[in-house]
Image (cartoon, rainbow, N blue to C red; front, side):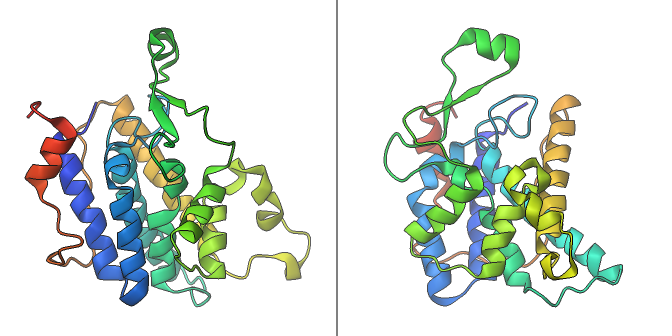
Length: 251
């Protein structure tokens, strides 16, 4: 199972469209600058390293992020219909967290500093399904921590809700999140449900992607919310050029 080159290009255009339609002003400009800087790496990055995890394939990262954005909005609407208090954060904060929750998987800025590298061990690929290895040249870090650092590195200010939303997206899979989710007093409970919504959205997206791999189903990605034609020269994607840059003569 893999994405076609056309799907990879289309997903990248959809991702830029999310930034264009959901953000404004300096924040939008800085997000676009960061994403354009990471474009080549991000377009081809997987979402995970093992084939039986989620979206372990070229282009899998962007496909996963788009699905998390969609799932986050659906989960938000479900919580709203069920009577949850959604007043503690904005829809823009929700989209921001969904968009950037895993950006730490891009690694550190600079050539050769990506997190995931194609595995050169045939034994690991064949026997363990480990298609990618973790770059040994990078310092150890948790993905969510690196996500927050990257946003700071590119000069993108984040709110407390956004920082905590990114941190808590992995739920109790990350032991450091335990004090936030398991509290012994009312005062220690989370002030908003953003972390819960994001963890459910990320889990839903990852499970769908696993099932799609397990059942060998065709890949589809939709973000059915606001759309905007991208005309800004900074964000306009020349699909043919990107296709040629990524795949050369393999059309």
